[in-house]
Length: 46
Length: 393
Image (cartoon, rainbow over all chains, first blue to last red):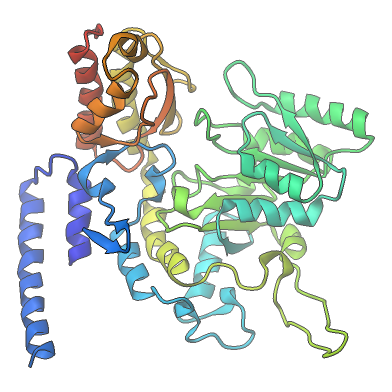
């Protein structure tokens, strides 16, 4: 997911002005990332 | 942020539009970045290495299939992945060149082609490019005749750049190969700037060998590349070992001496493999890349005193520019001297111009989006206007 975000940064450099589709993709990736971080907290810090 | 002792995290391609001529085609795909993280350990691709114990025979991950796919994609009969295009030149030169043998290169050949010839003991015989900076079949024929006259034999090998690194010009490899084959000279097509960038058909080019660069043009980590050969030549350059230890009697199976056994292991290979589906797709859309390049070159040509030194209209995205009559004039009186130009571009989010260069320089638009190409074009015009250089409408 971090790599997918990285690729969007590359495609939109240098201004990083995201179009609607890119914004939706970033929102989806960040939601997934938050979920994954939550899982990692539960698994590794239990 | 650091990712190791003294190693800064690199964010060039995330923060800037990168126009460095050698970096454009080697930027990794997302899949390649994920693959190299997963296969970061040294012998990571060797978990399932079984007899006959050679890299290009490994089925999982699908390395054997990848080798076949790459050969077919280049319309050649066999391929090996290499640690860089230069190792491909070296393997071929070492196979065919003996001490004192004449070898055809061109006046635009990359230095690693010269080193490969030197390492094998050959003598460099350059085909001169013409006034358009193109290497032609007629010039190749004339050079071969000169070589035959001087050495009393034809060259033993020809290394011909498909697109050269100096001008990014597309040379008539098919025409040159036809001439070379009339003298039984095997031809290596150096596709370091074309394999993975635009369609390459080795047999249509008449090449005995096609060499590509993974890190230059196949969205792969360095050092990586490919050496592909026809079936006839594959038997020679990919011959298997015959050596035997005189004490132990050991033999080494199907290992290939020119490949030094296994070639490209671990992260570099899986990075190349992960990018390959994307690379196969992107070469079909090279017209879009040329359109992006056209937007930028037209902007540069609108700046008074600027010349495109590469063939024009462009057939490749690597382009050589002469701004002696424009940006260099500003440098004469600017407080930052020639450094103002790269500095101004950096301020606009553009990276890759050699700091201080204001006369003759190169850029590459490969892999940009149309929006980024427009941005780059506008940035060149803005730097010109900000510094009082006339821009034609």
